[in-house]
Every structure is written in structure tokens, then in C-alpha cells.
Length: 486
Ligand code: FAD
Ligand code: 2HG
Ligand code: ZN
Image (cartoon, rainbow, N blue to C red; front, side):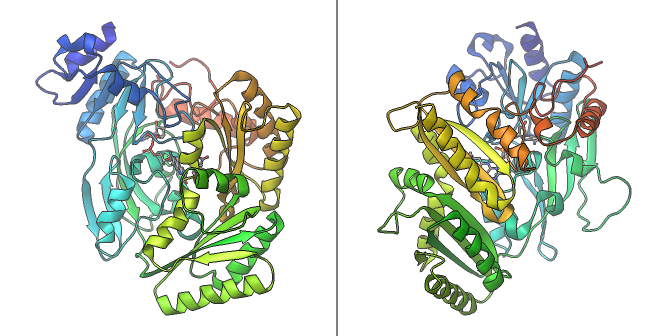
């Protein structure tokens, strides 16, 4: 109440021109009031699983405005949540209580693009797909691609160290990001927006912010190296009889066309059924236990076409696959990709989704999905007319990254208790990671110990305390609760 009113008058003072939204009841403050519905959108995450009750969303238009707001919050000890496109899947982008939301939506300018090196420097709030389109016109592409590309911000991608569909080819943001501009929790600006490919002078501080999920600063600018856009792309989907065969196909695809391979994704039958029921066109007549999507990106269409059709023939002859389709044009390629890309959306439309994003040895991936189905069957809760409707397994096979989506009628403690800590213990038992690419957020802040040792966690907590001494940046997220802040 009082905080918000004081904050609002700070924001509406002549020196500040911030676009701010507050609850209608506070409209006397002179900043833009909005309806509860609009405010609810910033308070709820993409899954509608996590909901805060913030009354204030700030949308700065420059790095200096971000710094002013953060400095104010630091001085008044007001907690904040950095928010990009709000597509995060671990409850990190929304308030837990009434933290002030600092949105990067209006930090959306491209600052420079070097057509020789392919280096892009832009504001953190640029939407991934818009950036890809803009540099696409110059023959380049963004080194990451994900289903949320139409909404997620590049700053959010960096803050979560997003992986995505082409990680296999272009690698991690830890390698592609060249520099960052960050507003630190005390309002200082750390200007590290370098465009150098090589720079071994001291600690590489930007790496700390890549994947820090808004816990130690707000990224306002990103410098990133982008690859040439391939002139030839092919997409094929194979139907496969067993998970063993999926792995064999992966080996064969790598040896046959590894140099042009840009994605190798898989989904099980239940994931496939989910997207087909959601309305995506099924290119196969029969049902199959597994499906694999591969994409090649090269510079010689005839060469790549020949390689891929040769591969398809060889896989069919060796019975490694039971069926296969190859896109004949861009629109067919898009339709095949939507079989894979729409799984998250299809699951969300059907019910309340429990999501697990795990790294583990590839041979183990399907085992866990089967174990979970068995577990739910034993408990009598799995079926279209029961509490759990679907258990689907899919993901980025090429990166050893399994996604499990458990579609439930509603979020319910007894359902969660059937899944957790079982999934985390199982993953830890195969030396996997409980977060391959989505992060820890609110969902897994207390679970990091399943993957990281105590010493590592303690050092992480020290780093957090060093940057965010007052504990105002994304509290209750990312790391286990630590000793009281100063
Ligand atoms: P938000 O959701 O707004 O925020 C995510 C986290 O980053 C929060 O903790 C927030 O506080 C912090 N944050 C946001 N912006 C900043 C900033 N400027 N400075 C500091 N902290 C910040 N993820 C993958 O890794 N791979 C995928 O393939 C993938 N596919 C997805 C598909 C769909 C349909 C959806 C809905 C999500 C998908 N995700 C995927 C998860 C998510 O989209 C990504 O993690 C994305 O990078 C988040 O970006 P965002 O701008 O939406 O961030
Ligand atoms: C994907 O690979 C995303 O499609 C989303 O990482 C996964 O929703 C999920 O669980
Ligand atoms: Zn993913």
C-alpha cells in the first residue's frame, strides 16, 4: 500500500517518464492505471501454475531508467522480479508475493549489427523471433530457436540460458553471448557489452549472469554472435519401433550427415497423439511407438537432399525405422516441425501440466517415462477419465535432454506427491540434472541438491549475497533460502 503509493509518485515525478501500471484503486498517483485482468497477466506464469499478487509493473525504456528504478528499490528494500516474455516454465518470472515486476517489454531496440562478423548488439527486451527476422534479411540467424520464440525476450533467454531446438548445432549461450550490460541490484550499471570473440582478461563475469534467472541483476543489453543462415534446409520425421532404435538412428544420422545436422528431436506415441488431437496434421497412417524429427542445414540443396533421401532409404532397408516422411517445401517443413513444437501448447490446452526437464544418459530417458506410467497405473490415477490424463516423453535427444509432461485434471498436492521427489531422486540416481534448460525458478529453488553438491551450493549462495546483499532480486527463487540478508 504505502510503498506502492510512494513508488508511484517517484515514478510519476517530472524526472521520470516511466510507463507504469498500477491497480485501479491507486489511480490518484498519476501513473497509468490498468484493469485487474492486465495486471493478472503479469502475475501469472505461462502455465497458470504460479501466481503472485504484485500491484506494480514498471516498464523502463532505457538502461538508465532501469538503474533509477532498481536504485530506488535498493534504497527502500523493495523486492523486484525481472520479467521478459513471461514464457518461463519454472515460476521464476512472476512474483511469489507482491514484488515489483520490472518488465523489459519496452527495452526493444537493436543497437547494432555487424554484417562481417555477424555480431548483434540489442536491448534485452527484443523478441527472439523479431531478431531472427531482422538479421535474417541480412543472411544471418539467431543461434537459438524455441517454441516460445514469438514471445520470449533475448534477455530472458540469456537469463535462463535457454537451450532449445538447435542447441545440438549452435551450442550454448555460454559460448554465443559475447557481452552483457546488466543493472546490478544496487542500481549500478555493469557495462560489459563487448563484441570481442576472444578476451582473456580476468574473470569472465558475464558467464555468471547467463542462467542466473534474475537472481543477481537485470540484463538490459546483449551482445551475441550469430551464424550464417543456411541456404538449404531439410526436415524429416521417422517412425521408430523402440527407444533402442531411436538411439541407433541417432548414431546412423550422425555418421551419415553429422556435418549438416541441426536438430535431432524425439517424441513418444503419447506426445504424438496429444499434438494430433490438438489439430496438427498426422503424416502417417499407422501408429508408432516413437517418432524422430531431424533437420539438416547446409549450403547446397541438391547435396543435402541427396544425403537425406539416401539416409531415409538406408534406414528403411535396415529396418531401423518403419516409416518416414521428408518435407518437400518450406510449408511442409513447418508442418513437420509443429508436430514437435506444439507439444507444450497441446498439453497446456488439455489440463494442468507438471513439467520435468531433465538431463541424463540417453539410454535412460524412456525408462523414467515408463516408470512414471507404471507408478500412476498402480495408484489407479492414469486414464482419460482419471486425475492424470497423459504422461508424455519427448525432447532434445541430441543433447541428452528429456522433457516429461504430466497432464493432470488440476494441480493437486496428492498428484504432486506421486511425482516428487520420485522424479528428482531417480534422476539423481543416474547422475542426471533436474534442470537441463528451463532453470530452477520457484519450482526447484530448494531442489538443487539433487544435482549439485553442498559446497557448490554454498559458493553459489555467497555469489548471490555478493551481488544482491539486500536480497531484493527475485527472492525465494533459484537457490535454497540462505542466512538473513544484511
Ligand atoms: P521470462 O519467462 O520472462 O523469465 C524467465 C526468468 O528469467 C525469470 O527468472 C526472470 O526473472 C528472468 N529474466 C527475464 N528477463 C530477464 C532480464 N532481462 N534480466 C535478468 N533476468 C531476467 N526453454 C528452453 O530452454 N528450451 C526450449 O526449447 C523452450 N521451449 C519453450 C517452449 C514454449 C512453448 C514455452 C512456453 C517455453 C519454452 N522454454 C524453453 C522456456 C522459456 O521460454 C525460455 O526459458 C525463455 O528463455 C524465457 O524467456 P522469457 O523472456 O519469456 O523470460
Ligand atoms: C520444448 O523443448 C520446451 O518443447 C518445452 O523446452 C518443454 O514444455 C516443456 O516441458
Ligand atoms: Zn526443450
